[in-house]
Amino acid sequence: MRFHVLTLFPEMIDEAVTKSITGRAVTSGFIKVNTVNIRDHSACKHKKTDDYPYGGGAGMLMTAQPIYDAYMAIKEQIGTKKPRTIYLTPQGKLFDQKVATSLAAEDDLILLCGHYEGVDERVIEEITTDQISIGDYVLTGGELAALVVIDAVTRLLPGVLGNAESIEAESLSGFLLEQPQYTRPRSWQGKDVPEILLSGDHAKIIAWQKNEAIKRTKARRPDLYEKWKNLQ
Ligand code: 6GU
Image (cartoon, rainbow, N blue to C red; front, side):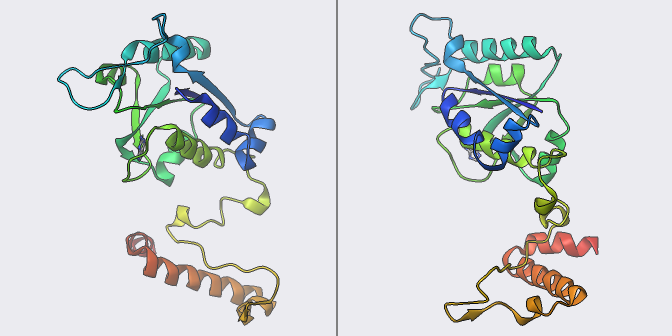
């Protein structure tokens, strides 16, 4: 899968994706992250990418021209008529595991990161197919949100996670949070690992873990607990 990221801060993306599991996914060829500096597509001699908003108001807006030209260059390169193009914005649809799964089915994803006070509405209308928010808080730019999307989508791609890191065993697809987990030492700061986990009784351990996951979900995320209960 190829991610094409339109941004004014390409280093933010390039640096982050070389780490951890996304880094491994890049080097093993499961994903390619193509960052495109919007500024490189500015037609003006000062390479300006922003301007004052019509109607007044605080701050600057990103202008349509450099974004559109950067988008057209990518579109030409990938040869897709209407590539899935996502604008990262707090006004978008809330990103969740279901949205991640739907994005993981694409061959190419274009991610547009806004900055300043926003982006000229006309270019958003012209090029984007989706608008995504990663939560109800305001970031200074879309780059961290784009990285969240890249991370969540990459780990869903076949082959990216090893067996040990398997997606299946994981909670959020089934709406349950994960149970508490423990590793050595057996006793730390006077706290012991729950006896059952040392029992060797696999069936009992699985039942305990499931019950802990249910208890934790009910206490911390009653909204997810209700969804889970309705599926039982
Ligand atoms: Cl996608 N972008 C920005 N700038 N802020 C956000 C966001 C996105 N999601 C939540 N806050």
